[in-house]
Structure formats: structure tokens, C-alpha cells
Image (tube, rainbow, N blue to C red; front, top):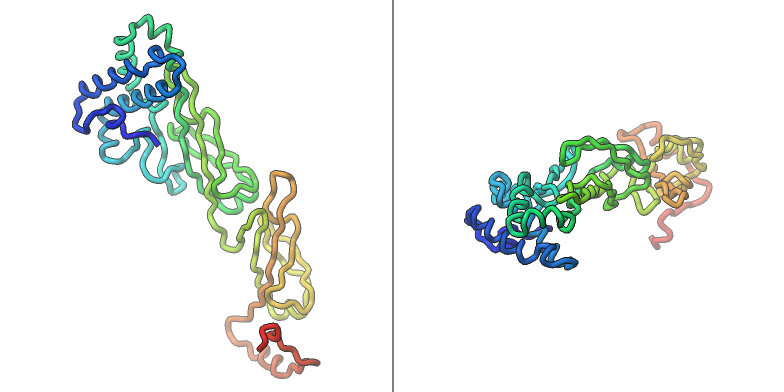
Length: 304
């Protein structure tokens, strides 16, 4: 997270443009790459000071920062993400510089080091653009099966993102060169997309295994037979053994989450006997007339 631009320049929130300019001149004169060649710490401080000055030197962006609408990098505060995903949109400044800021910075550097120095040394302060982070919410089945999502980047550009099959919450996708533009001829940064997977109504995931509670009727439990089962890839037929109790788990191999190593996880189907919501007199009569051949106590393992 970028530092407070006022603290970076060492000025108060009421500082005038002239005061911020003088503060930046002082830091640039101390940390500019021409003054400290090969000093990575000094280069980082110079870049930070340049970003801070560019923000505070832009009246509109400075006001937005003071109101808490953007952070010191120019990104909207709060949750980051793509429009249409219930999140805010991250825009940011090119390479940490507010619009129009680089021209003013260039004037100051030219004044400090001379135009011929600036032209000859420009590559010394060419910076890669900042990375921009987004959060992208995807449906459960999109994460499991993979999907292509059309999203709008911070600069308004439409971009298709491939969600790999087997993705999970917290996975990061790096889009090379889709971040903030570089400065001084530097390359653009990357867009880093964090995946957030929405929960599913029926499926639950543990690693590459998916769990499903499957309702069955009493008749299906007693007689067995073929029943339809929902999987992430669609509906399949499952042979139900006769005399099946609630809680019995059947394993459908390879019907879980695809793996990057090529072997998919399994789908574990837990069978749950569900009676009709309203009382059925025929069922009551059937149970009343039923006389088991031998006594059966389903709670004997509990000692009751």
C-alpha cells in the first residue's frame, strides 16, 4: 500500500502547490537516479516522492484523496474488482503518477539537472507501471469447469479472462501488461485478478472432492434402481443398491473438480431418504401391515 503523499513529501494537508513543489525538488535532488546511480533504495524513494507530488499537484485527484475516495496510488478505496461483480473499479495513476503530473515532474527534473541531462539519462528513471489488483467473483460451476469472463479494465478496455478449470477462492491470475502504464518509457504493470468463488446451493467442495446430498424416496431406497444424479458436468445415471439407508455414500470417480495434474477428484453422493411432506395414508397402512422377519434396532451401536 502506498504511503500518505503528505508524509512522503513532508508537507501539511494545507500546503500550497508551491510548497509541495519545493518539497519535491528537495527530495528529487537528494534521491534522483543521476545523483544515486545504482541505489535501489534511493530510486524507490524518488519514485514514491514523484507519485506523491503528482497526486498533490493535481487539484481534482488531491481533493478525491482528501475525501477518502482514492488511495495514494489513485485506486478507489474499499473493495476492488470489476464492474458488474458487485465491486469497485480500480483505475490508479499511470505508474503512480496522476494525470498531467509527469509533465510537471519533467519540468522540475529538467530545471534541476538540465535538459541535456534529462534527455541523456531518461532511461535511468524509467519505471515499470504499478500492478493493479482486482477481485472477480465467479459462480461455483464456472470455477470447477472453467469459463471465459468478459470484464472491463480500469482504463475502460474490454478484456476476456480465461478462468482455469479447478479454480478456487484465493487463486491469482496475472494478466501481463494490463496494469498501469509505465513512466519515462518503462513497461506497463500487470493486472492481478483474485478469484472469489460463490457458494453453490447443492455442491460443497473440499480440495478436489465435491460433496452432494441426494434426496431419494422410500421406494427407491427399498427397491433400488437407476436414478439421476446432478454433477458439475451435467446429469448422470446412478444405480442405487436395494435396501439403501439414509447416509450411505456412493462415490462417482472423476466427477469432482478437474486437477491441473490431469486426474479429477471424485463426487461423493450421500443418499438421504425423504418422505412426502404431507402424510400418505397408503404409506401408513403399508408400515402398519409390515412385519419384519427379524428384529432390527438401528440404534444398537449407540447402546440404546
